[in-house]
Length: 218
Image (tube, rainbow, N blue to C red; front, side, top):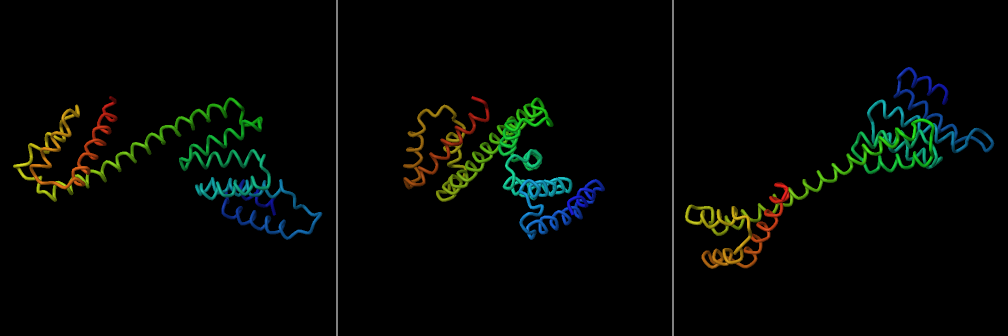
């Protein structure tokens, strides 16, 4: 069954090959003791299933197949390498770096240590870039949610009209933070605002200022 599966892979009939490998695994699992039911063989078959999933762009299934393969043989270099390939495509860069570290410990002849190091540096750079992207996105999302609260306060006290425009504009455009509390206190007294609503405005202004400085590179 395994040989037939490999032939199907060579013919690029990956879906059929997966079925062959599934049948091979079932046969091995049902085999009596003493037959060809060794862990390395089962690991190799699952690794071959992972190859088929990679070829058909089912990357998460490829990761799952590699995970199973490594349960049977933790030093299956092909399974580790194929999992690295899948992780890199689905942007799981930290996991991809870990896979490459595992491969470097095994010291396979192919890929060479030099190639593994180059790939690791690439994955590490992508991991850091993704982390920064996620942090910026989270900060931006947080700011958007806080802006909604700020706008709700403005709406509550009717602070979006022309009469209060100068007061609010000063809060939003002043960047040095000087006398912020005095200006907030003046607005609170002028519009008879609750302390909780004032805190909402202050927190938004604080975070917005930090975010603006981060974007400006200050």
